[in-house]
Length: 215
Image (cartoon, rainbow, N blue to C red; front, side, top):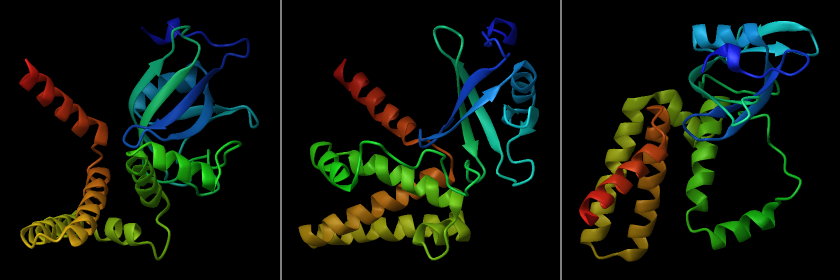
């Protein structure tokens, strides 16, 4: 499919949902016209059409918070786009990682209930928070510290936590072991984010291996 087959509306626009290719978090909803879509495809960075200013704009041109495009998908009607990106900072003009920060339905109690029924909900939440920390770099946050120090520091922490998991297991100390495994999982998630490797790709490897062994 090429740009000419995209179905723009009567104003010559198409909605573009921007999604973090790594964390899968929805970052923003913007609009593209034919020119901005072509520039996005050519430069592999997001360009949009501002309906309020009636002009083309390059995301991150002034802030530096550009979005590297990994893929652009279209829906079955060819009248909406999902733009998968690796962001170089916050997506929102407020400085937030995502423009979608509020909820009409989910409050703190709902999150607790969800976590109690979905045993892996915390992994999804951690992945999102880690991505948010990398984008916003809030002062005083431990995750910010790790990203600021870089890959060598993150790798050192992964190695340290792995060693502590081994020691706790050798000591037959389940209480200590659960804490050390939790630390290891967290630091591995930070490493995956630093490397821009989606957790989904790791899970896909597990699925593929399991499928091969089942044959």
